[in-house]
Image (tube, rainbow, N blue to C red; front, side):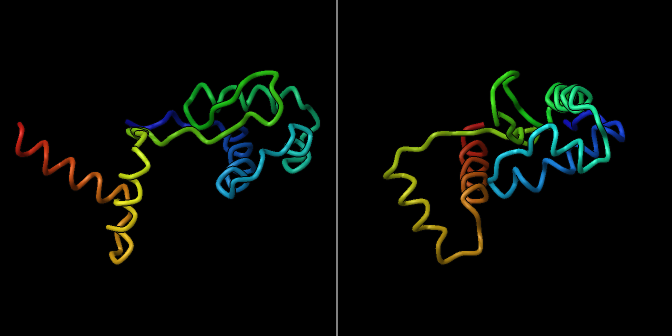
Length: 116
């Protein structure tokens, strides 16, 4: 499942937001985004942010300060593991070049193959 295509203006706003959010920093203000893109209207930025959320690129809460976040990639599932299982998982992947997601996907694939 892929996300809808962005307009050039939406793409510009997304390219300003992406590095900040990926680095774990707060999203720039609408005024800062507008200035970086050579735009004047914060209202236009608000519209593009709303469209980015509607298209699944970001999440945000209207009228809340600094509420913009990257949306999970399509086909992403988030799970909560018990702390002891996280400790065991991290110890398991430490000597390998795999990620926790790789190990979980491999284990789930094997499990579902046995129980199909």
